[in-house]
Length: 298
Image (tube, rainbow, N blue to C red):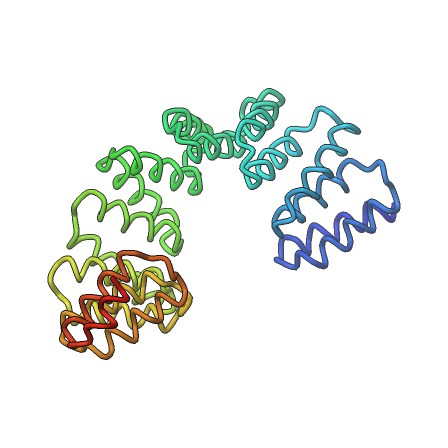
């Protein structure tokens, strides 16, 4: 009785994002009843969401020893194994979940992830399509399918699906970013830039969106605006060397040699072995008539 109450309370906390508190209650439930498969499964789910994949897999395995025919636990195990990059084991777990319940759309969605990560996009696409066939408005599966199509240069269908997904979930930053990337990959730079502009308008603290916008503006010859985007990205996430390298290149083109040198050095402090950045820095030193430093950089 106490175990069941702890499990229910733990699930409520987990749904609210209070994972640490949920884990404590699931551990309490397991202590009260060590052979409770639901307590073990719930604990594994919470641990996996915290990145504790090895502990999660151990709990899922124990739960399946106690209750072998459990599609939800098999599906959760598949996700934890995917996080460990054990892709074949992940696929096997998801297939078991589907064998228990052939209409388990979530398991089909999970089944697509491992093949996609390992380069087998055909199997990934088939799994995502099956998930959507079972649940036609399945936003996560639609996003995953479009990403897989994008990776195989099937841009027309990918863009169409992204648009449908955005209609269902217009506030999903992940979908919006993927859609912009697909437009960029399809060679539709102006449309991609417009999409990134919309994203940074709605999500002004997203460093990656500012960076991607900066790259598109730079390629379009809008150097000053690109520089402003890279500056914004760097201010939001100062730990990304590529942002500094791109910003330094803009400064170099603008003739701001001291700023370019300082910015290349910031990037190289984060990524010392970047040969391309060292070469570009050497060119800036040459422009600044600092031959010895140029030679050292080259």
